[in-house]
Image (cartoon, rainbow, N blue to C red; front, top):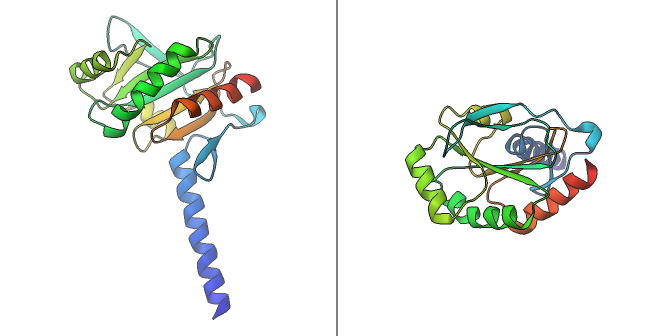
Length: 179
């Protein structure tokens, strides 16, 4: 009986670990649901993706090397948790010029995304991805999701769910320090 209970407990733990790895996706590691920065030598190359800018002409590119570490916030105007976190992402973007912050509206109507961004006062570059190219490239299974890329364009961490300004600062500092 004890052996059966032990096997059942181990199987349950394996399911939880596998689920956490799936949610984290893209090579990021988590400990207790909190993403930890992947060691520099183990970081996978980010997948370059370009999407139309939400306002103005041209494209917004993510997943390429940059002079600064990059935070890519994936969101939608119809997503309640995205609405709650966006002011924190905006504050972080304003207070942290050493980090490039971009946002990509996923599966969203451009007009609705623009209106939401205006209401919140978003000043960082935004793109819109109606085909879910960014989400597909990075294995995103839900919104909001935040990707942390180092200067070389490698994926250092993935945060699934709403992120706080404190977590943006903590993870970005670790990525910048290890780049």
